[in-house]
Length: 246
Image (cartoon, one colour):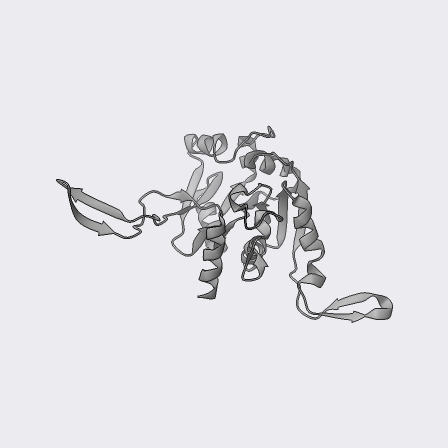
């Protein structure tokens, strides 16, 4: 099953910490975010990836092209100039698709339609980390029988909440869990999903495509209550590394 990872955005809110690389290459525990995402999928037997590239896409290509010798212990036979990896290398097949610098998320997905030849494919963002069970997600999608399944997250508020009666505080809750469910990425999609997308560069996945799926009652929600975080700012990156260490 093909896995599409959206990694073409500019990541403007990461500026100041990771200006010279795309956000997907920012490192958590000495590995890029996108490596962790791919590792999660591969643990469930999904080793074929499609990367719709945009901003600094050449650096993502360079990372994986150089991966064998940069990320592994090596033995080098000098007279043959032949580096031999001494550690296991991931058995991943990667399709790099240049989808434009300014292209929005929906159009990026539409532009890689020609590389998806299965009835079902997987989709996620290049900045979200989770311990979601991919097999259970796929099983849920098949049971619901809808065009797309989206992983929903009940996220804690970053602010404490005060309850007030007659101008007097009656209760304070530190970082309560919100009742609303947010888009956590980690989609499962039928090929019919491409009909909801446009190759217009302004097509945004989170706007008309998702709204039309909801209108047609074709969007299922798989609730995940385990580890999940979106790495959107330098603060998020620091937090992700702290969580990993702990």
